Length: 123
Image (tube, rainbow, N blue to C red; front, side, top):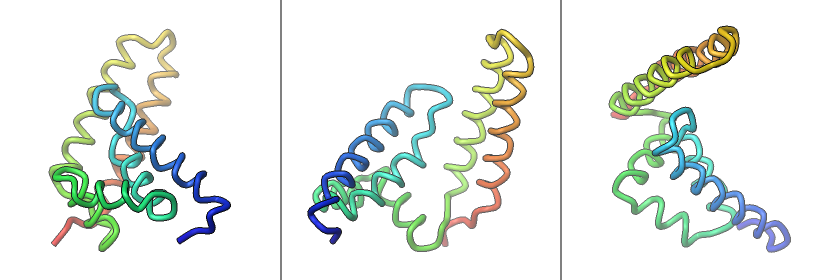
């Protein structure tokens, strides 16, 4: 466990990350999974209760276990993330004031998708 001196910072990071992850469920372009993984990481050092809750959660638990054990992401999660990024790219091209803005965001998401598909899948 981290020293009590910094424990509250880890606690704050864990809950803030989880909050952003939950907002990301409904806000296109804001990722859920990275924030949940960051929350689990920070909770290890700041809130054992939150960590236990995340690991026991029916949706987040398996995702966290797969990531921590193997750096793995399920095929379903990869498909969902790629689909959401594609949807966000379409929305950006329809609404961005300049094409280069949408292209920059789309290029970034394409790089993230390429990285994501290179991750192993759980056994």
